[in-house]
Image 1 (cartoon, rainbow, N blue to C red):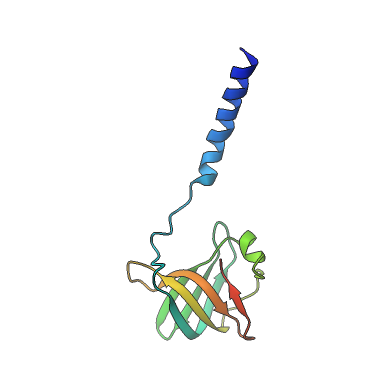
Image 2 (image 1 turned 180 degrees about the vertical axis):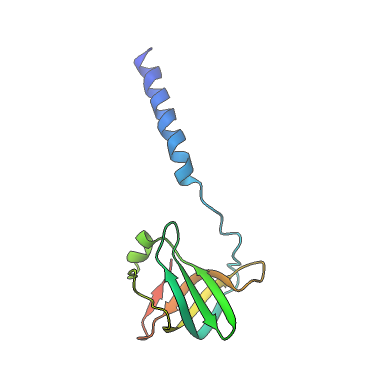
Length: 120
């Protein structure tokens, strides 16, 4: 096999293996033309996980599931695995789900100490 053809085949193989890493879900499920702000919600749980972390928070009887970025990217915004604890009272702003269910893509959190921290 000619060296040039061999290199081209190897490059094609590497690119084929990288394709699943580039495949990621769309953000079309979030309405990024609307920003919902809630004050004094209670953290039910905070999941520090890949591919996305998320916050589950309660506003009265309504439970919101709010998707965040990956832990790797959140670390650069100042997040840690224990930034939020169950029972913390926080304020959130998020892009809501298009289907009207309570939840969305978390944009910003105001922590109990008053510090604002971005989730993306």
